[in-house]
Amino acid sequence: MSIPTDTIVAIATPPGRGGVGVVRLSGPKAFAIAEQLSGSLPAVRTAGLRHFRDDNGDVIDSGLLIRFAGPRSFTGEDVVEIQAHGSPVVLELIVTAAVAAGARRAGPGEFSQRAFINDRMDLAQAEAVADLIASASEKAARAAHRSLEGAFSKAVDEIHQALVELRVWVEAALDFPDEDVDFLADGQVAERAGALRARLQRLLQRAATGRLLTDGVRIAIIGPPNAGKSSLLNALAERDAAIVTDIPGTTRDVLRETITLAGMPVVLSDTAGLRETFDEVEFEGVRRARQEMQSADVVFHVVDATDPSAHELTGVPGHLPVIRIENKVDLSGHMPGRDENCVRVSALTGDGLGELESRVLELLGASDAATEGEFSARQRHVDALRHALAHVEAGEAEILASGSGELLAEELRMAAAQLGEITGRMSSDELLGEIFSSFCIGK
Image (cartoon, rainbow, N blue to C red):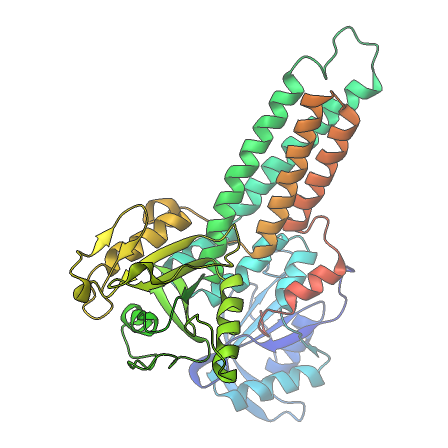
């Protein structure tokens, strides 16, 4: 991706009215354009009160102007921030004046993209900017900030360096086969490969937890009609989000509700009851319920506690954790609580819901202790780590089974390439464009 040579401008504060709004300029002409708008510039990193004028010389507003000289700025370029009154009309007039003076309107995420291009942050840190803005809970915000500070990138870089060092060791052994010591056969290479595998496994688990903090946990509530799925959704959401009746098949479509569970965003999906049906609309609801199950992180299999053996769940992907929930314990005479096989609750009275929440957090490795100090991550990061781990495992298996240094070196190379995708050191322009297009304008 080439170094930009133009100057961009955008409103950096959210849409709507407020006490203060910010217009940001970045690029080689940022100072000259800001001087044309304000008449004069304050010292670098000093706020100055100025009048902002349009291209006709008419005053638009008065406010503060701050400038940051590159490379010591967010983007690594000369940057100007204009703090005016937070009227959308006023801010748009300032942007229009900047464009008339030679700037270009910024695209989504273009300021963060320039920070990446100018080595002010790597790709994982740039993504953390968007994650921090979009964070839906305190835990998610703290995790995104840790990624922005470089915690995730540092962990990735350390493993990447260890991969490179082991590959150099293996390549040296291949290039100098006449040495007295057979480095590939003495066990050190296999031992180091095993240590790398263990480190990648730990980082993958942390990234998977970070992905849940960023994206939220998707929980599909699945079960037969009248098991109390909608009542459970309402109880967890603490409001009447779903219609509840005694008529089987009331829920026909997927109803989603976002809640916060122990500081973690959770998207609950109430689905149509699973049963054989000849009703065309209900049949579509059942199809959508099964489709929702395929894309979930966790499945709540809800059954009626008065007849818990009446329904068995089929078609669940092997990797997907399922929590069996026996609902309506207030009618069954059973005590609420949990054991190895199920959690017994009453959506009507709320009994057992605390045990259910604890079970979810344990299953995801997302308890308070587990998420303390974690960083944010995205699905692409998790996928890259899984692929890197698979390459290291394959290379370790080869060196143990056949002593093949060539195959190990190639697997290590491909693993390192996967880690390079996370930080952006080996990312394609297409990937970068897709990532930054999801950012908001002005960031």
